[in-house]
Image (cartoon, rainbow, N blue to C red):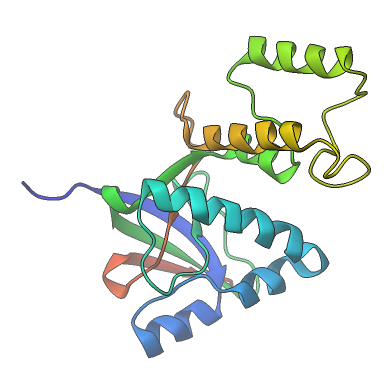
Length: 192
């Protein structure tokens, strides 16, 4: 039985072309994240480390990979090339793709609880209010950080729901991969 392949699209730093040429593989590097996010890169890096730990349980991470490569699942939703970037159209074995819900990832970026559904969200917020909390923010950083370890654990445990796809939507669902090899690349798009 042959392996099923899927198409993905990703925008990467232009230096990824050098990595592919020199090493025969592109892997996301801390320096690319720092270059892309500047002063707020530490925020993303800490959350990407959490993502790596959990995503490795879905698709094992190859030795030497530090961070995942974010991809779009459709050409319509792909990020277009901008200056100093290249976009790749990829064909990847489906078994190597980590699908996740980008709208749920926003909860992770904001350090808040990912509810199971609307009812769970309502119950969660009512419980916080009943316990005297004005909102759901600040349990992982800020004034309440480290004061409520059980709440922090509850929030971080909910983040695993990012890998639960409730509804397939090409503008919300994303795919991550650990590396790009030349044989995966079907097209490249440069900034003009």
